[in-house]
Image (cartoon, rainbow, N blue to C red; front, side, top):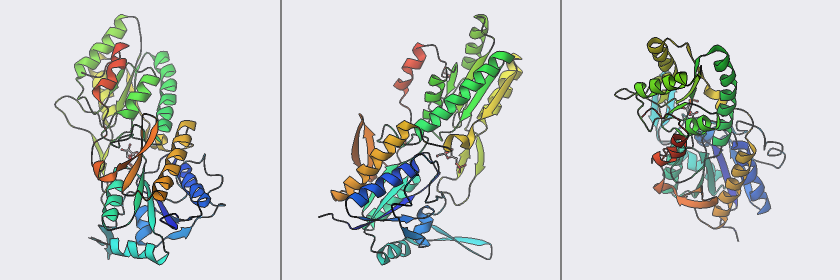
Length: 360
Ligand code: F6P
């Protein structure tokens, strides 16, 4: 007999291609095993505000290929430090007991949390209060410790690669340096994969402080070889040797307040000033997060969804499903949350072998 009868599901943090595919997969697995499934709207905020409705087959049909999340999401509402605004003044209160009470009222006895690092930490705090929780690793950044892939990453890379193909033709026509700034927070996964797939000459990632002289050397050597243009992919978290990351904005109320961005334009100006080569920067931004998931992400999302329900059926909670060696495994959330998921430097070797400059 299944240890749980009624499961809640929520999507937390930024949206990401494949969220709907996970929701569909979890819901279908629940239906197959005779479990009820409840959708919690707008992330952890909906748990506090009691925005919880039962999901039916009709609601989860036709969503596999759709970007975004049918449940809505937010990266601001942490029930353990929940914003309450009265007369323009915001204070933060612990509303976790209210959230648990909302679940109890609907007899929801376990929760599937689809989220990134911030959501994992909140999920773990609920687990410590006795709520059975299974997490599914979501983020285009691929920066969650313990899993080789988060769903959404493949779609973001494919979007960035498409942008690079387009920038290539315009760079070539105008004999310019074209820079593509991609997302990724403090990890260089999107930059590395899209840069390799898109044939970039330089790939600058947060794992290596870049030396502008090394970038200039690469541009000059291309020129000396008769190449009239160059392509650079720069991760939003990349920074120059002796310098800092470029902060685009600060988002109050978000567990991770800093939003990175702007390094690409700075780099373009610097290259143009020093070399005289016309340089342009394109910031891909949220295009990387929108639209349909790739087939890879649809399959991975579906595998993660069924694995999350399998974990619940096995009575194994407090864990995150993860991909390792193409197998889905379960890892205790406490061994993952808060740990960095950066690019190991040996992953760059194949790029180095084909002459890519990583700024070092
Ligand atoms: O974590 C996903 C991500 O898209 C990062 O790559 C990026 O730094 C951040 O979220 C942007 O956040 P927001 O949507 O709040 O601007």
